[in-house]
Structure formats: C-alpha cells, structure tokens
Length: 488
Image (cartoon, rainbow, N blue to C red; front, side, top):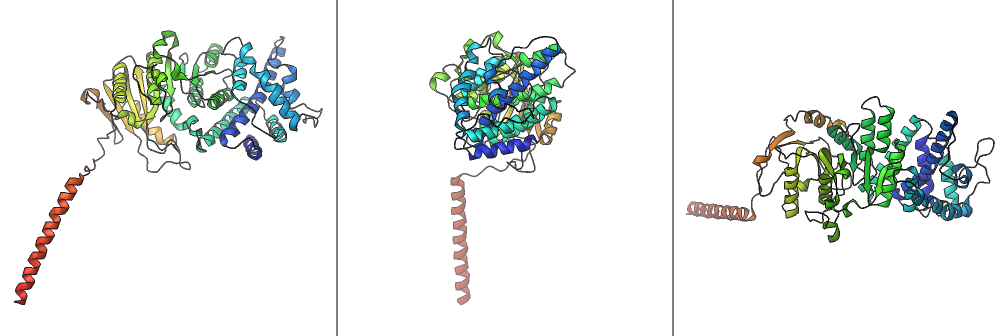
C-alpha cells in the first residue's frame, strides 16, 4: 500500500511544472509527510494524556492543523469536497501556513525540541508545486497514510530510505546524501556504539549513519525508560550544511523514531578547531564526508593543516572532536593513503601519532554509484599512537553498479576477520615502524597478490626496438650473402 502511494505521489509531482527531479520529489514529499506525521503524533499524545487524566496542549493552532486545512473530514470519514484546492490552497500554503510554521524557530525553548525543528524545516524549504490541484491530489494520498503503529512507521521509514537511494542514483548532487546502507551497517558493527555513548556525524547528509547506529543500539538489550529517553534526546548529534540534506536527514530520523533530532543546520568546517572544548566532544564519530570539494581560504584558516580538500578538513575536525578513547569509522578517498602533497603527509602523520588506526577497509570501485572514485574506511581510536594497522581488501568476483550493488554478505568476511585481525588472502598487517618516515605512505599493497612486472620506460622500449632492428638488418645481410653464393 505505502509503496503504491509513493509511486502515485511521484507521478503527480512529475506532472507539476515546479518539480523537475528526484531531489524535488523527495523535498516536496518530505514536508507534506512531516505535517501528516506531526498531526498523528499530536493525536497520540492527546489520547495518552486523556487516558492519564491530563490535558495535552497541541503544538499547532487549530487553524493550521492538518485536519483543518489539509484534510477536513465528512461524517463518513472522507475528505470534504469543499476542502481548499487550486489557487486557494496554494495561497493558504505559501502565504499563511509556511510563514506560521517558520516562526516556531523563534518561539522554541531550545534547539532539541520538535517546535524548533518545525521552524527550521519550514525556514529552509518552500512549496515548489505550482498547481494547487496537484498539491490537493498529493495531500489526499498522504492523508491515507498512517503513522500510528510501529510496523507502519517501520514500513514508512524503509520506503523513505528507498526514495533517498533513488535520489542518490538520479545523479546531480543527490549522491552526496546517500551512502550504501550495507556499508554503513558494517561500519556501525565494527565501531560498536554502546547505550550511554554519544554518536556524531558532522557531514550528516540523509542521516544514514545516525539512523543505522540508532537501530543497532536499540537492539543491544532490553531498554529501560531511561535508556529510551537517552537514545531519543542525548545520543545522536549531527551537522549539515546543505538545506535539502538537512531536511531529509531530520525527516529520516523522525520516521525512524527519533522525535526531535539533534541535527544543526550549519557549516561544520566554519568552526575553528581551537574552539572545540571537552564538553563539545563525542564518544563515537561515524561519517562519510564529501570528497572532491574545495573550501575557501578563510575556512582553511580554522585548521592547523591547511588544505582546500573538504574531506581532509573534516578528518581533522573528527579527530579533534573525539573524546580520548573515542572511536571512529570514516569513509575517505583511497588517495588519502598515498598522496605526497604536504597536507596529505602531515595529516597521515597526525592521525598515526594521535590515534590508533587499527583497521583500513579497502573498497572496490562502484560502491558509490556515479561517483567514480575508490574509497577506504578508516577505523581508529583516539589517544594512543598507531603501532600496527590491519588492512582488508574487498575483492569481489563481480563489478558493482546500480543493478549490482554492494551487499552485507559481501562484507561478512571482513567483519569476521576484523574481530581478531587475522591474516588471509585478502588481509594483512603493516607495522608502522616499517613505513617510510618521510612520506607516511599507507598505500594498499596486498602482499598476497603477485606483483605485476613494472612497466618499462620509453627509453628501454626504444633501445630494444633499435636492437631488434640491428638483428633484422644482420639477418637480411646474411640472407643476401647466402642467396649470392647459391647463384654463383
């Protein structure tokens, strides 16, 4: 049912002149879904308060309730045919509803409340639908969805993840927001966040790392009321620069059961590293910072190792923001391990000196569809220098792509061997004392793979060709002599 509704919504949005891509589809679906979710949540709280003999004060005023403007009902439960539509609906949404919801940001008591998130969301986006009739059709479809049971919420969150994945596959900058979930789940399992620890992603995107960490942690044991409260409000933290990713990240976490996500809309790299204090640090960092980006000079001034490469600035940030003994799983381009520029060498030295880089997972190309880059995952613990690093090279017997994506089964051997850092045909250990102290080169070189002979230089090839020419000339001369002797 839910899947068909999502498909029908996309079909309507596709017809609307204001929506042109998967990114627009998910943005517009998100704000409408959010308001329906909010209405269901308010009903739940109202009913719970009634049962407890208490009174519940609704967040949304009567005029702006979903059941007032979006889905006023007839006695038979169907939407009133006099409900706003066409230009009247567009006028209400654009000129009354959105301005009203934006103001919640100013009225909220603190950023970790759902009121603040409402204000943030509706400050960052706008209604893109240009036809009020299309908007009416979408609202009618969304009204048929229910968020009242845990199974319904689970199904909805799964479908939302699918939409995020489709957005990533659609190209443009959608891929920035999507890290394959099998990879995220593997990273979470290895880092193993525990109830009571804080988890942070400073490049939160669609919040895939935080969502998967939440799913992993809530299944660790039977949770007490205090545990649930902690998971909801004091465990997961994130920052995101881009408006659309910020909206999607919040929506994704809400649909997975985190009511007021601690995600801040800000440029993480605008924060000076020197200003990070102990109170700002986290137990666990999980992230896939954007690679290939370039930061301005003024942003680079916030970091001791100056570089325009966005991912390298993020790595410095992550090392700094980890608590002593804190653990991290970070996706980064594999060229980080071998680049010879000053920033790369300095950053590798800093990582090895201040953290125990205990594991490097080398991924094949095609893991990130459309990105065309090879990546590695760095697993490290802050506070002790690295003595040994265990490498695992994921060698698959197929090419990865849109129709052949990475699976958890592909990563099962890595998870098993990583527990003991066992050596195998795909894994080996490097002693840091043996690497070049001038370059700190950590290139992935599997000692179990026969080395291909090095390519010859052009000079060697030319010399060999000249030698062959001489031999050929000599043979021709000898042949002429033999032929001449025979004629004589």
